Image (cartoon, rainbow, N blue to C red; front, top):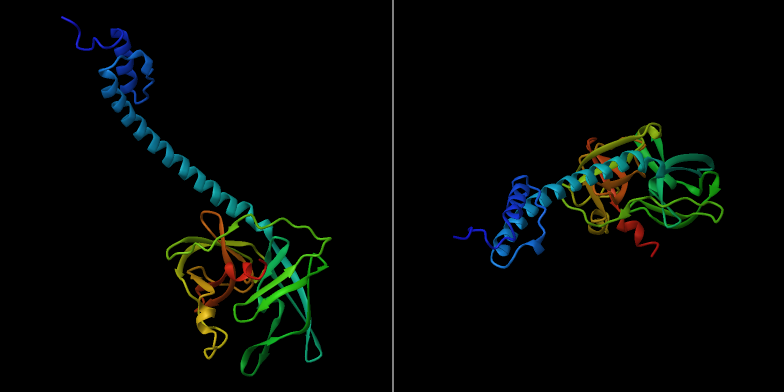
Length: 271
């Protein structure tokens, strides 16, 4: 009577295959099997490979995500740049500083950093627009390309003698509630502070004027997070956990919420 595994070339081939399969690491040479047994054993091997492949895939994805988070904390801070703006108001000199980023030879920052200043009065802090303002980055004068007070956008072109690398994260308009995000901020314009949180609002608040005729357009230009907004954070890039640039920080609301200008509001001015 023939062995039930007679389709195998020899008994040792089967023992080798069975041993490898039990270890979860099949090393099967299909050329050593004849028709009949091939199909059954091949399907079994595929199942083992499939399970092992999923485990390996999950490990690789986890490690890649850790790599991206590491880049957020260790690489992105050096790609935020502090600019200085000088202007006038009522014939008095005014100076402001604030952060921004570089994208395609342009400097992205906030309108309220480069064009306004806060004046204290008996009515509280009042924001005033500067006259004859000039913004410099590393001592080089920047050429203004676009400004939008409603969306708090300010864009400048770098001079030919100032070459800086682009912000590493690719711009993205893929934003959704619950998304993990990070703010590369500088509280009080001194210390670096990278804070993580989640997207909690897909629209902004009409902070400038409740009577604004462009309210609908304005709020859709912003997104909100549960990352606290601290003075000096304006102009800080907001990035997703998968290393995408989502926006630029603009203002806080109720002290513990942050609102950011969507990156599309910048990109539309330089296309």
